[in-house]
Image (cartoon, rainbow, N blue to C red; front, side, top):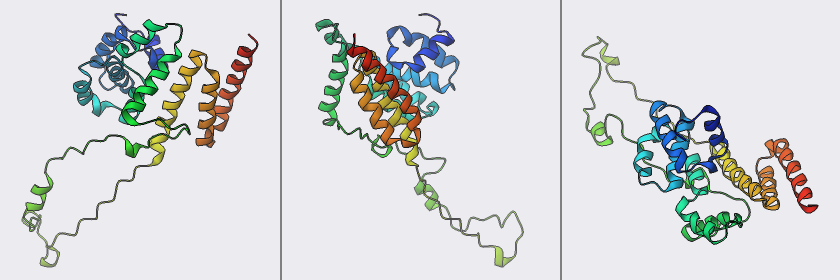
Length: 239
């Protein structure tokens, strides 16, 4: 694939598991042409992560300010394995495609401990974060500034008003837990879609049922998916 079309880009956005060595160069070209297209930046970085490309860390630092959600990239990158990790499985038994998912889960368990079976996922607070980059002044420079710096030399004021008004206390930044919910749902729905493609409908059904309990406001959305899975399970049992 030399030049990526709109249809191909839309397909990769809907199915990031199709990212490969063949999609990396077109995405690298697109991200240079459209650096503020957040979905393209996300796909490009995810493609580097899936391939285990040496440029991933440097490119992540370069393009991080353009990401709509670093948490979403983190969850997606955890879901996919580098291609070189998948090759031995395919060579051993190409027909057992579900082994790819099992091998990924084993690798995650080795690194981070066993995964929970109750569909509980890490919150945004557990994700790795970077400290805020200091603005024009560091805290030390700010504290060492003369306390009598006012605009009295520029604007004539009464002596009673020469003292600067106290600055309002900074308000704490409250991060809503709702921000982590779409990423949780994205992570589990992507895993469910992999199960469906592998023909493991019961496991996909368990995931969707768990999501419907976790996100009751979307119950009608999940009901459609569960109805679809029921039909797949029924057809598979009669085939």
